[in-house]
Length: 90
Image 1 (cartoon, rainbow, N blue to C red):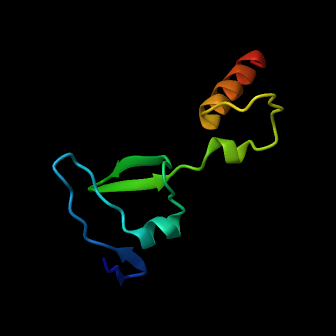
Image 2: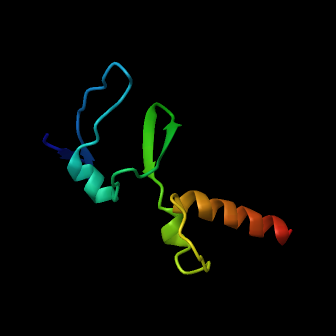
């Protein structure tokens, strides 16, 4: 799929399937750092759907917590730990 660039913006026309899914072209995913299993925030701004990649919590807090055994879902673990510590300090 070719990207169209005008006014400094990159665009692509994609087709939505019956379940409402879209395929984001590889070039756009690579440019935004969207990788497999990555979370993406979906919002509406006026008449547009905006997709914004969410950086991994694990990457943000790497090295902050000492962990004896690594959990299966590191992002979920860190979200719980951060909430727990925040509640302890408020």
